[in-house]
Image (cartoon, rainbow, N blue to C red; front, side, top):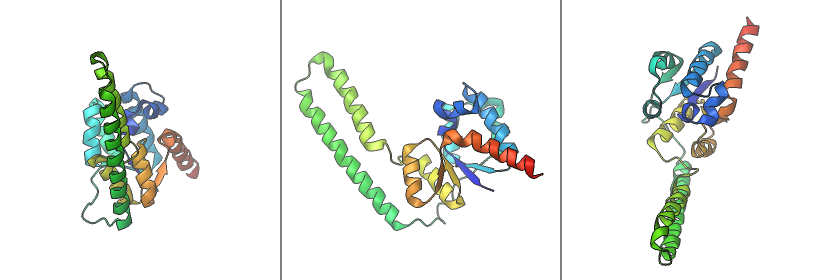
Length: 198
């Protein structure tokens, strides 16, 4: 049976949670819990990711059921061995992004001399947007991301996330990935298979 490792995006990204047939997050969580319990699969979420999710989504009465359906546990960080090549790639990626961010800041600094007082806010917003895109998009950039990646690696699990950076780095270390928009269909398939196997 598969181990699915969930990222917060499954329950906080509207494009993903709406695949569970609900417009609101709690309805989607309720549907997920029902499918997860009946699927026979195991679901995991690192403690740090769960805590992050709870800051964005109040599970209310569904919290106990969610914790029954999804095992909340951190990866065993001190026991996991990851190929050193991955660390080298990460450092190279960070160096590239820092240099790219520096070039963006230089461009906007040059542009600032030509900007009128009323356009300063627009220039700053453009700088922030481009800088954030250069430094954060497509990379693991938080402790929660690292925990999700390590837990999926440790469990040889299937990663379920809409985060582009997590998907990219999971692929680099050989973690199985599914499109989170397919999760509902996969769970329904597992339930159907379980029912016909009886």
